[in-house]
Length: 264
Ligand code: NAI
Ligand code: 15L
Figure 1 (spheres, helix red, strand yellow):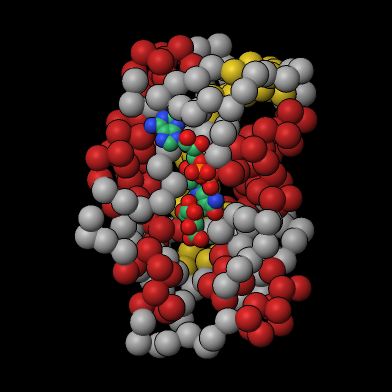
Figure 2 (cartoon, rainbow, N blue to C red):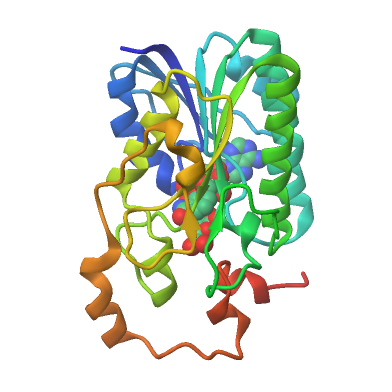
């Protein structure tokens, strides 16, 4: 096993439940954390509940692990305070704890909403300037910058995975471009944990979809090779959904519905 102990935050969430099963292949012990209770540890697991807004709890959660997969936090847009507490303050706590305890590598669940204002008529690379589409997107852009600082100053490597839409299957036309299968999610996180030199990297979390707005060619060193594709769902989705309204930014931007939510 490449890692002795990996910490998985957000373990009670949608993607946390998926990675709880598959990440065990990568480590001897998987430490699981969330704010919400999700029951007892199983074989090869530890459970440590912590609110990301609580610096001491986060410090204890991080002590003794050698890598972190950070999924915890507010995962949609909404009023700024909970987002600030979990995704901004919580990230300070996490990186300070990682520095103090010598954690060398972190996989951070960033989001496509960091670049949500780009048009679906353009393909962007990993180095395109951020255009966050929401308080939520701003908080993820902050996480990308904070982790870059911790790499340049302290050498802590981070993969910022800008996840598209990771669900069992795509459910609308936008998701035909943004879909990341659960199998590819696991492959991508594993690649980030195991590639020899990661540095501070940004990579889009998507499957091998024919229509895409994102170009991962600047992140080949991560070694991620998607094996699934949304293409098999295209006919079904087209039959079930209306054509896009080109005057509605929710239909024409990378971020979709997030660009028209709020104010709160
Ligand atoms: P989720 O909302 O199902 O899970 C997030 C978990 O974080 C929840 O279990 C929640 O209890 C926990 N959490 C929230 N605030 C917390 C706090 N203050 N302290 C400790 N824990 C807290 O989200 P999901 O879908 O599993 O996403 C996981 C991560 O991936 C999130 O960071 C999300 O922003 C990111 N992401 C997910 C995408 C997707 O398609 N599922 C797309 C882009 C990004
Ligand atoms: C996200 O960042 C959210 O966490 C997820 O719930 C989806 O809304 C996803 O983006 C998306 O853009 O489809």
